[in-house]
Image 1 (cartoon, rainbow, N blue to C red):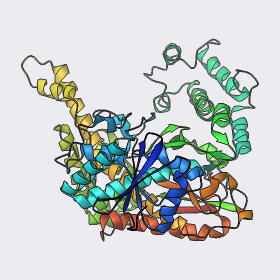
Image 2 (image 1 turned 120 degrees about the horizontal axis):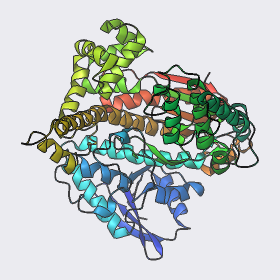
Image 3 (image 1 turned 180 degrees about the vertical axis):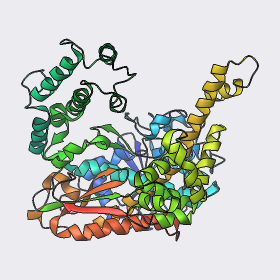
Image 4 (image 1 turned 45 degrees about the vertical axis):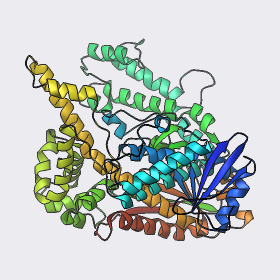
Length: 572
C-alpha cells in the first residue's frame, strides 16, 4: 500500500468497496486503497506477512470470521466498538473527546447500572456500529485522543489492546470449534435420561422420575413444570417453600424432595443440552458457540448462542480430541482471591496464595476452622456477605489481611454512596440510575415510611455488593485477557504438523497447529497435536506468569494452574 510500512490499517466501507487506510504510528495517513470483499483476504495476508500491523475496524465479528474462513489470521487489531464502551465510561478519561455523543457506537445489550445479576450472566444479540470509512476513521481519532489525554494512558492502552485481543480470540474459538463427540453425548443423555424418544414424549428415565415425584405428592396429575402449580402441590403435602430451588428444597425432610431435585436436574439437562441442542450445535465433530467478549459489565465474557459458558459437568466427557491430537486443559486455582492480593498489594494474602491451596493457607494463618470456612469467609468478603456464617467470619479476615479487605470494603462504601469504581486497568462501573438516586435522597425526607427507608438501605447495600465485586471480578477478567493474548501468540509460534496429521474440522488456519478451543473465565482448553502437548502445557504456564507480570509488575503473587493432558475434558 505504501513504501513506508503502516503502523495502523483502518478498515472501512465505501460504496462497492472495502477501504484500507494506512496510517503511521502518529496517525498520519500514508495511503488509501479500495479493494473488493473477495480481494480483502489477500491484501490482509500480504500486509501481515510484510511485518507488524494493527488492524482497526468497527467490530471484529463483522470482519474477522471471513478472513479466518479464507485461511488468514491477523496478529493484532483495535476493536472500536469494544474500546468505545470502555472509554465512554472510564473515569480516567475525563474529557471524553465526544465519545458520549456518538451514540451509534453504543454497544447494544449492555446491562443497566443497577443490574447486579449481570455480573454473572448475560445472553444477548449484538448490533453493528458504523462501518463507513469516514466514520471509522473519525471514531479511531476520538479514541486515540481520549486515551492520550487520560490520567493513565498506559493502562488505557493496555486495556484497549487486551479487549481487542479478546475479540480476535473469540472469533478464532468459533472458527476452530471445540472437538465434540456426538456419539458420546448421545450415550450420556441415554444413560442419564433414557433413550431418545421418537416423539414429543419424555425420555423413559425422566418419565419414571416424574411418576415418582407425583406419587410422593399423592397427585397423579400434578404439573411439575409450572412453578406456581408445583408450589401449591408442595404446600399441600407440607413442604412450605417459596421456590423450587435445590437449596431450599433440601432443607425439608419429605419423600418428594430427593426425586424432585433429581427430576429438575434431568429436565435441565434435557432442555438445555439435550438432543435438540446436539442437533443444532454439533456439526462436523465441532461445537462452535458464539462468544461475546465483555458481554458482562465487569468485562467478563458472555455467550449469545450455544451456552458455551454453561456446559454441564456430565457432558464434558463428550469433549474429545481428534485422532492423533490431545487436549491440554488448564484452569487457574482461586483466580479472584489471587487478583485481590495483587491489586491491594497485600503481601500476607499473596504469601498465602503461593501454595496450591490458598483457602487452606488462609485457614491456617487466619485462625479459621478449616478450609471450607476460609473459603466461605473470603468469598463472603468479595461478594458482600454480611450475615450468617460468612458474615461472622469476615472480621477475622480483616485482621489477617487488612489491605485486601480494605480494598473491597472501600469499593463497597463508594457504591453505597452512589459512586463508581474502576478495575486495575481502568474499566469503570456504571453509575446508579436516577431512580436509585431519587430513592436514596427521598429515604431521609419528611414523610418517608420505615418500609421506604429500609428498602433504600437494602438498595444501597446491594449496590455496595455490586461495586465490591466489580473491582475484583473485572480485574480478574483483565488478567484472563492478558493470559489469552499471550498464550495465543505462543501457540502460533509452535510448528505446524504435516497435512496427514491435520485436524481438518478446525479449519484452514488451525487445522495443522495447536490452538485455543475453549475459554471460560479462568479455564482454557487447547487442542494440540499429541507430540506438542508438553510444549503447550509449558506455554500455558508461561503465559499465566507473563499476564501476572504485565498487570502487576514484580509484586509476588502466584497464579497457580491445574494443567491436564487428556483425550477427553471430562473430570474425574
